[in-house]
Image (cartoon, rainbow, N blue to C red; front, side, top):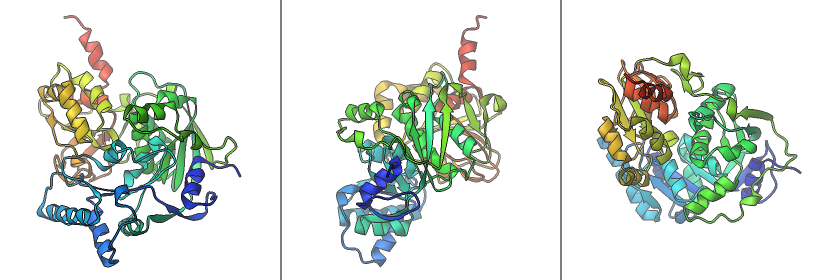
Length: 426
């Protein structure tokens, strides 16, 4: 019977053919545990008296949400997790290593056809590279670490047919927010979005990571990009094997719950306005809105390409008086590249606060927590009320280039405005 990409991946992991709606016990290929749910995972492992994990080489512990530790309790959590990581011999990415999803990707653990699970809701990120990436609760994760298996109800798939090429100024963040606008906060509930079409060639991996990351914010279970030459080139450029990618494509006559066609050439820069990532409007609708803080980073947009876009705007310019620009690289490798390429100097000279790799204030835990009167322009994933701190804060979401331009002017700004002002001769 013809299968979607999701059905193919879960059939391989289950060891028998499955279809949407089936309950399937599947083998996992990689597991990630971060420091928000990690302490509870550790507690459950202890309650179950687990003395070994299914495969320590395919497990990663990451300290990113509380990095560096903002409270004594967070420090205690890390101490507990360090001890368990040592006990079981799993890879530990300690304070300063970076954000969990970026580190899994950099390790080459998210591969076409793989089942990759994590204790963070944005584990759908791994679908950018053709994996079935999904989040698990703490108890589910503890059992998966012990057994190497977990169960899913096989989700129905939505085919997202991408055509055309995005115009200049339109990023993966704009594509993702456009999709959220189409679906609403619950329009994709427990569905797997499968990205296909001729337009894939125009979407680089860093943008795919952003899009796959954000599909959960319309309720989706997963978001998977069909592996192609862009995927193959990305793996090859990092020294990873690109064998066997051809097997992980949906059948031409697979049955989908729905088909969406997005013409990338029709898109424009957009912004999510308070208080939902699905409340998306054209950038022009909110242009001129004054801000107090700009935040560039997170698992959504903290990669080197995001900082290249920001630095192209910030070079030779200064952050507006009264505005705070916080920059959190998504990993230590990205931090080093910022240093080696001179982009770190561009950021600091512009007046940015260059922070250590990690999640920072994305979830309102530390490192720039919002106050009641703050208006924030962020490249992060969510702008729910109270997400970054005080419930009175207003959070707008958009691309790194728009974030940088907004930091320069102190109001939500299209980067093209700065380009045009540079051409004005006084």
